[in-house]
Image (cartoon, rainbow, N blue to C red):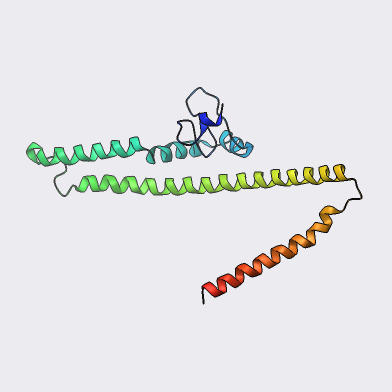
Length: 177
């Protein structure tokens, strides 16, 4: 699978991890943390994912718009006054009920996304730490155990970072008197 097959705008792209979501196909993940979370979801989490995915889709928006237009149209032209005459109190109740369920589901989805982001950030941090350890080991092996190049650069880098921080603070102070 190439980047062109899974890039943004293609049907199989999903920033949360699963790249191929058709039934019967193996799912691919960018991060082991996403794989673990996906494979160990509870039934409630699976239902919440499906419902929030459908609420945020164009078919849902178009379908709901068609239903509302039909509802209003049939009630305006209905013989015998229709089942929900103007001002459409029953339709208002349906929307209120839908909103009462949609809002908590969307908040649940946001909480689950925040947890996914946190787990992925922790995984990335562990990978970065491991890469840094390998880099230091490679540097030590390449330059010998007596080379203290990295230790010599540490204070110089700290000095440059301190100067940059002072410059940023000074610029913010002059820009916002």
